[in-house]
Structures are given as structure tokens and as C-alpha cells.
Amino acid sequence: MKEPKRIQLAREIWVGRAVLEKIPEVCQALDLHGEALIVADKTTYDIAGRTVERKLREAGIKPSVSLISDANSEVVEKVRKSSKGVSFFVGVGGGKSIDVAKLASFYEGKPFISVPTAASHDGIASSRASVRDNGSPVSIQAHAPIAIIADTAIIKKAPYRLLASGCGDLVANITAVRDWQLARDFKGEPYSEYAATLSIVSAELIIANAKVIKRYTEESVRKVVKSLISSGVAMAIAGSSRPASGSEHLFSHALDMVAPKPALHGEQCGVGAIMMSYLQGGDWEIIRNALKTIGAPTTAKELGIPPKYIVKALTIAHKIRPERYTVLGGGLGRKEAERLAKITGVI
Image (tube, rainbow, N blue to C red; front, side, top):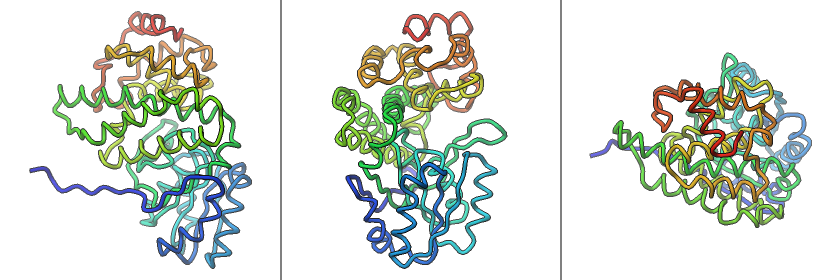
């Protein structure tokens, strides 16, 4: 028999226009009271954090604000130090603020509410936090948000590039799940069919609705946000990032390390998924065509990254998380990497 397993999921999920106004109701339903710490950067505070602060005060909750400019271990510790006496955290942002709030609240043993201002990656709903430690990106197991409040009117005001990046992160689930299956078959790694299926469905919904998403309406935002939430739930069920993070994420992390000016995380994962799908023997052209339709990058030029860094990232990606088995195996040589990037049209 398998060992008992605990799955953490959000208890309240609100998606739609003007749902940010519902935060007092959410707090009441979850019995959240006392003091709250809002974690945001200057931009996301102006976009939504100020409203969150006002609505919490109206609900009889004392809010304080921690403005951040980066997502690294030092910032997480700084936020923790400013959270004494706080009952819960609210992360307001597209990625960094939510990851910092997620990790700080986890270390403090407090719940947190996720308030995304952009749909740029699945961190808005997952139990994983991506921060930098000693200059290198790390993915840390934390806890899932107790609530997600995704106001589509606010998210639609974000640059379209961020929504397209979220789509890149989602289509990458296809290669992530295939890598997970390889790890199951060759390394005996635990595998959850349910989590894998949910993750794939999240990716397929993006591919099937690529033209709808390109219109950039609130319907577009709703479809992407729901898929991001489903992807986060898949990771919660799996108890790891396996359903949504494979060789394409290793490529993206490697690119962050070698490129002078990396692109957005989801953009890089989308391009990585094209190449990794080719290596896996998958239908990589479906992924590429969906990203093209959406308007997400599919080439090094569109990422704004010189080809030599794409090749370099491909050759070192397998070293990022050596314990995680993927299609990259023991790594690619320079010639293999160049061939892969050229065949798929990335360079």
C-alpha cells in the first residue's frame, strides 16, 4: 500500500471581473482576522495592493505593506522580519510578490492569499516558490494559497506579453509530463496518472483556444487563469513540480544563468518545450504553432537572446537538477544542441 498523502488545495477560488472587491467575504469565510501583511512591488501595489489594503481595513483587518523589488532568499527573510504579529499574508503581483509571500508565510506557519495581477506563470496557484539563492534560481516546496482571487479586469490591463508568457509555461506541461513518464519508466519514480492528466488538459486547453487567447479579451484571461490554477492543482496532487516542470524548465533556468538578458520565464519554457518535444519524439510543431498563434516567442530572435546562449543553455541544462531525470539524460554536446535548435527553427 502507498503511504498516506496530504494534498493542499486552495479553499476559495474567485475568478472574474471585480472579484477583488470580495476579499472581505473571503477573509470572513476563511476566518482570517487580526493583522495582514500585503507583499507587493511598487507597480502591483498601485494596481491592486492599494485596493486590497482598503478592503481589508473596511473588513476590520489591520493591514501593513511590505514593498519588494526582487524575489530572493534575502528578501524573503526581510519580509519575515516585518511580519511579527501578522495572522496571514496577501501576495499581490504577477510572480515575485506571490512567491515571496508564499515562502515567507510558509516559514512563519501562516496562510496566504494569492492575488495575481498578471497571468504569467502557474506560481499563482501552486505550492512551489521560485526564488533566487546565491544568484541561482531555486524551486522550493512551500504551501498552496488558502485562497486565490484573480480579477480578470485587473489582469487584462497587464501587458499582453505576460499572458502569452503564461501560455508558454502551460504548453510546457506536455514535455514536463513526458519527462515524468520517462523517470517513471527508467528510474521507478512515483507517478500520479491523475495529476499528469490534469496537467496535460491544462496545456491542451491553451493549444485548442490559441486564437481565442490572441484576441486578448476577458474571456482570454479567464481561460489562461483557469488553466494556470489547474496546473497548480496538478502539482499539489503530485506533491512535486513534476507535472509542470521538466527538461524545458531546466533549459529556462540554464538560460537565466548564461544569457546577459533573459526573457520571461514562461517565454523561455515555451521555446524549451518546442525543442524538448522534438527530443521526446512528440509533435513539437503543434506546440510551436500554438505559441505562434498566441504571439509568444518561438525563436531565439523573438526571445531577444543570441543563438550562442541558447546552445550553451542546452548543453548545461541537465546539470541544473541532476537528481531529476529528463529526456536530456546525461546532457547534450555542442553539436547536438546546435542541431536541435536549428531543426526546430529556434536558431
